[in-house]
Length: 238
Ligand SMILES: Nc1ncnc2c1ncn2[C@@H]1O[C@H](COP(=O)(O)OP(=O)(O)OP(=O)(O)O)[C@@H](O)[C@H]1O
Ligand SMILES: [Mg+2]
Image 1 (cartoon, rainbow, N blue to C red):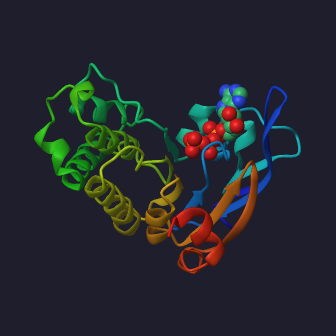
Image 2: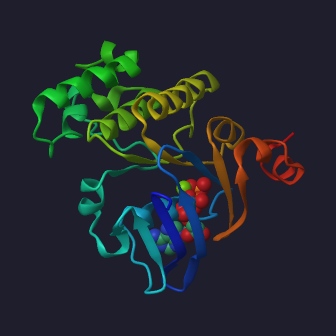
């Protein structure tokens, strides 16, 4: 049984049928990417998983033994699914360290929180150097690191990452993707990665799904997709 099992996911925004019956599975320990163009429904998929959107009766989103469609957003977080939203929403008027500490506010074991803080600052040395800086004054890439770091502070089992590479220079994109791979490998965190940067996403992922206007049109091994002529023509711009 996959850890995360999405069956027949529909989302309506008023009369707009944004997701038209999506099936998607993520096994524990996997990196799975969902790629697709602007407006395909990638963010909507993550918001539905996180309990931020209503879904109809026929939709099922199971995470291990829990039916997530029955849970509130904060209950989903308590079960270990943590969403890093599009556009890196950090608390601009708080320092880097305060932002990170906020990520751990529901946790009781302060020693483990401290260990995780050290882990995050090691994973992102740029944040270590800027611990006391106000988050709003960080560069875009640094804010993305902070958004991921803050999510890590809640000790997630599954990270739902929405376009972590958006708007970043190529060298920073590399840094972010390296850290995604690293926290999957060293911490065993399962990752569902939503990306328009198909090239990078397919390089780090084990498996991939292609989303086109609310439907999954292709899925498979990420390496195979990198070599698939249809994927190359539509998403790799070669
Ligand atoms: N709150 C909303 N109200 C109405 N329509 C919406 C709303 N949010 C999203 N949509 C529509 O749903 C569709 C899917 O949007 P979504 O944000 O999921 O796309 P996306 O794949 O994340 O795109 P992008 O790559 O641009 O972030 C789009 O047509 C969008 O206009
Ligand atoms: Mg989006």
